[in-house]
Length: 337
Image 1 (tube, one colour):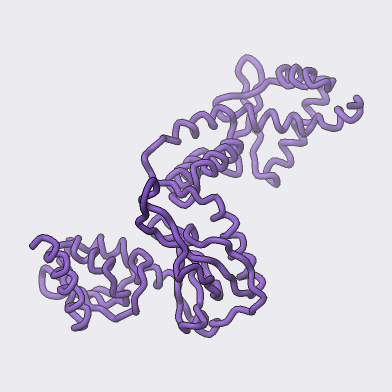
Image 2: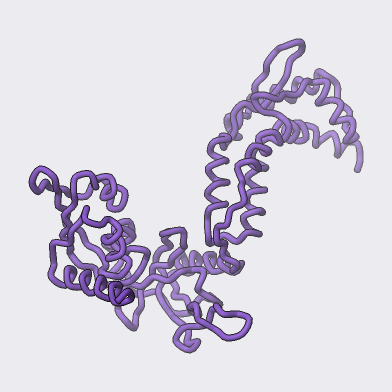
C-alpha cells in the first residue's frame, strides 16, 4: 500500500486503537500511539497526533463517545463514555444467552459482536458474564430468516405461507421428532405482529378462513415465504391491544377470551401486578381479600396458573370458568385414582 494511502488511515487507526484498547482504567500515551502507528507503516510526528486527538475529541459527542485524558507521570488518553455502557452490554449478553429461540451458535456470534462494542478489557468482563447452563437452545437456524420474511410481509402488506411443525412420538432412534401439522398442508395468514412470551417468539396473525386472530411459534414455522395476496383482517387489528392480548393468553395457549372475576388474598397483590400490570382495576372484598375483573383465554395454562396459587385465589365467575376449572381438577385427580 502506498505511503500516502497509509497516511490517510492515521486518524481512523488512532480511533480504532482508543476504542479497542482503552477505557476508564486503561489509557494510551501519545508515544504508545506513535509506536503502534509505525508498526503499521504509518509515520507520525507528536504534533500531528495531538492534532488528530483534538479532532477526535471535538467530534466525539456526535459519534457517540467521549475522549478523555488523565495526567499521571504522562498524559493518557482513553474513551470514557461510549454508546453502550458496560452494564448495558452485560444486560444484552445475558438476554442473548438466556433466550431459547436463539441457537447456541448464533448466541456465540452475537455475543462476540456485543464484546466488540467495549474495550478488550471490558470485553473480558462480558465473557465472564456468559456462563454455560443446561438451558434448552433451539437448534433451528432458519428462525432468523423466518423473522426477516415476516417483517418484510408486514411492511409490504402481504400474507405469508408456511408449514407448521408439531412434536410427535416416534420409533427407533428418534423417539421425539417434529412433523408437519395438517399432514403438511401449508398455512396462509396475514401477519400483524411478533410477540415475545415465556421465552418464545410468536407471530400474531389473522386467519382468513377461521376469521380469527391466531398465533404461531416462530421456531415451529418452516419454509416461510411471501404470498402474492394482500393482507386482510386490518379492521380486526385496528383496536387490537397487543399488551393486553399477551396478558390474557396464558403461555400463548389459545382459547376464547372471556370476562373472568378472580378473588385473591391481599398478599397476592404482587402476583397480580406482575401478571396483569399495576393498572389493573382492584377493589377490596372485606378485610383480607380483593377482586379483579379481567379478560383471559380459558385454557389448561390459565387453570394451571390458578391452581399454582392454591387457596390464595378463587375463580368467582362466570359459571363456565368455574366448571372448566373443576373439570380440569377432576382430570388430574383421575390420574391418581
